[in-house]
Image 1: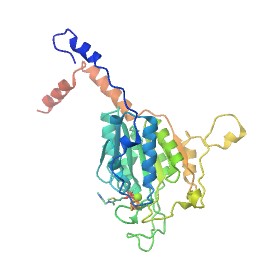
Image 2: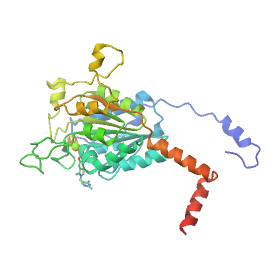
Image 3: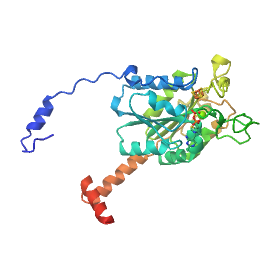
Image 4: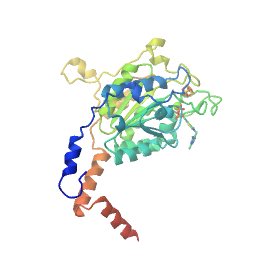
Length: 321
Ligand SMILES: Cc1ncc(C[n+]2csc(CCOP(=O)(O)OP(=O)(O)O)c2C)c(N)n1
Ligand code: SF4
Ligand SMILES: [Mg+2]
């Protein structure tokens, strides 16, 4: 900051005060409250993977924002020592959108459940996706409403007996991968909470992606839908089938591999019967709303003769007087 007389003394003083070296971000520094999930809940592994990624990437601590809606999974921000909030049920995407657009320098991570993301928040998910707002959204899908103690969720399979469907669910469940492809998300992936290495890989890829990146993670609710994801857990007799992505190496094997930029191929993968396949279904490079809006603001400002924020605000007030 200058001292006001134009001598630049202030600048010299501030230059002399060297920034202290940054301490490496540790798990200890990002760990907050003790998680209050039921022992054995899949969400613990998601939290552990997230801590590991933050530590590995050594992000600037003050640039991490963890957001959520309402649900067991949406307790997530309580357990991360950083900026965070959990918001109204289903309204996590709009909250995250505002923060992402206003503060493009922050890393916006969003966590939540299948109810929060695909039911009450399903509409917001579509709009966040089509607008390609920059954030990483991790949906912990347990096929049930956990927090409210076992109601049918939009991903519950037909026949699932719950408090809202005592004789078994009769409605066709949402297919998250199909919904996200159709919605226009630019990074779409699927993983399983029993596979920490796979989860970490996907969180890192989603984080590196510019745009609306979503990971659906099968995360078991041991209380209200136990063992449902065993068919994809090798430790419990299932098999975890990973998507083989194209290497573009001109080999005959490559013909059979998945092209992540092909949305029809992604849609086809999404039609595989439960438990399906895991990995990146779709990834494309499309301008984010963040970049488009920034350009629009800069152009408008230039047209108006580069006024300050205060002048723009004053002009707006004058107009509505
Ligand atoms: C507007 C509104 N409707 C309903 C509720 C009640 N409610 C809280 S969490 C929840 C569903 C949670 O399910 P999910 O998002 O799958 O998270 P989980 O608990 O399974 O992790 C519901 C219906 C609420 N809090 N607010
Ligand atoms: S009720 Fe289910 S989702 Fe909620 S904490 Fe317990 S095991 Fe996890
Ligand atoms: Mg749920």
